[in-house]
Image (cartoon, rainbow, N blue to C red):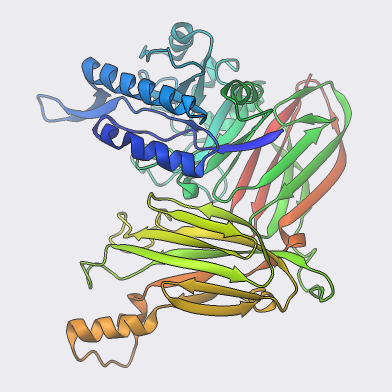
Length: 507
């Protein structure tokens, strides 16, 4: 099957509808298909002064929905698989869901309860719960009313954090007013109650589609046609990643993720191709770790082959820049770059968060790119704690250890061999430019420390290049399943990226 990538949680608001065309173009550049999630709410000030979130006026909703319908139909005619959808919240007691439609002739409905939403939507609609692990009754998931036919999978990672359970380091702390998270409504509670529900990650983005740092999802489909994508979603053949994409195949008894197998002893097969070194894969049966496949230590320290080409992956991160309290006019950086190699460029993955990024002229010899990096709005500094301001590219180069990689960043040429890139990560800083800027702005800036120069220099980080055996994993085992059991997989990369794979269920 094809692995098709998307962001199923891009919330465009009424005030952003004049940006719809730009959102669509961003989605088409980054995503294999797009399911827009129109956000029909706005803040309303009550007579007593309280500010509450409520539905937009009906005439606004109808006008916006028709605009989305018209553009979706146009994009579909052009061959791009785009789906209409919106966010539903009801009275908050059943949790928030994104509602999507297969056809473009459907209307939004806004009942107060989840079960009524299902009745009013009818066939040809799905409702995907998100940020599950908030408090029950206050926008957390209500598993007591869940319908697995209407909601075949759940969004368990987004900008809010991770709703898989209430443990681990990916806490739900970005939206403090809604938290903290609780395990009573988490994804694992739905599995414990016997629901056949898959899992994805998606952004909960309100700025543009496909913010990679907030997660994305993959569906296994027979083709990129809307009907085949829809069939893959209903069959729960989905998984999610926290940042970089991973090519994952997971079968039990020959059946893919999301499927159902008879109880008994089955062959479990896992294949992973990641963007960076894999640390481990965890196999969970009924939410309990049953096997840990440790990949770290299986490739480090091995000699690089000098007699045959090997594939390597390395990441270039862009986004560090001047503090606006020092240089208030340096809020956006538009830069250019290129990569050339005497080896062979096999692939380039775009880990992008904001609009304005472009990848051009990709050949086996190299590629060109244009990147637009922004000041972080979270802290008033570049690279705020939300991690959303970094723009990255993952390069896969095949060659011998002595083959050259030439990286041009804003007119500065850096040359390395593949062997050199397998060493520790390194920083490429525009240090001299920062010194000249400081002297031109402030005059005499002599000091016993270089904080003014280093802190305000534009920087690029080249992460360690790792060979193919580091970012690929194949594991096979046998597993015994009783009726009602479910088995799923988590993947951890050494750089902190995660993947969550939908379970296979036993009957």
